[in-house]
Length: 374
Ligand SMILES: Nc1ncnc2c1ncn2[C@@H]1O[C@H](COP(=O)(O)OP(=O)(O)O)[C@@H](O)[C@H]1O
Ligand SMILES: [Mg+2]
Image (cartoon, rainbow, N blue to C red; front, side):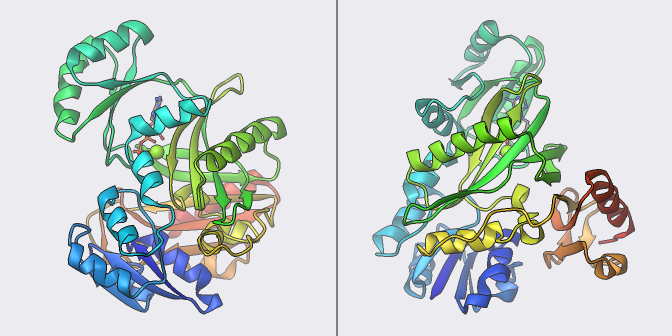
């Protein structure tokens, strides 16, 4: 079985690491030569997603195609489908999720609670939205936003012009009511191409400058809230006949109410803890799901797990040091993605610690982080 992956970053790399035990082979299509996944796969094809000749060459050597990011324009996924290969998730779903406005409309259409939102074509429309829902509000690029790039918080009318000028350059826009959430939650849900569905635990995700930084997973999560979220997630994947792992980012309000923030049609940073924390990782279940194989258990092995990202703090060559204590600790693991260059805010790796007491687990993860240089 030759599995083609669009994108060669850490998500593709971990899919390979977690499933090569089945004897599968991997072909990576990447815009960056010598990518993290390219370094460990059988074949890396480097080219722009818009290079249709190369893309067809890639399709020719794959049995099935999946992706590790949603930024490949849907027309190129359609091209893959027209070449006779199955891509999961497919162009219809990726296309819908790619545009945050259409995504929110789709969610609303399934009765999934989302913050108030509107399409924006002018500064006037932002003012109109503010009149209806008040300040602050968030102006968002409808496409190509990630790690908070593409969002602008508008505190008052005086901010509108600047926000509109800056984000307007990136393409189509939408507005969202600012949600004063208590915390951010996420869940991974996996649905196989045969329709089997399994949900991972709900996790808390803590952001640093809009980038996921810490994820806390626990078997002791509030059962009533988890039940509601599981039902939402199942409704979403069945509603769109999804195949693979889908991540759902949410806001939890003080009173327990949940709003869905966004979907990611792929494995997700908030699910990295599943490698050590759960019987079957999100990466393994994603590949099993697209192949139509039975799904592995999504249950946690340990009571608690904490994942901390190694986010670049400088620009330059990168080399990992200071991980001896993690090697010796049976409850701690490090994943370093083999990116040659570090950059401020770049996701370079992560640490996961598991154990019985959340506070101890969290403090241990923090202490390991402080020992590492990269
Ligand atoms: N409507 C909102 N209200 C409050 N905070 C928000 C809202 N939308 C986004 N955010 C904050 O910005 C972060 C990034 O926004 P998101 O829409 O998820 O974009 P990205 O695609 O960059 O992940 C979120 O994780 C959350 O912290
Ligand atoms: Mg997000």
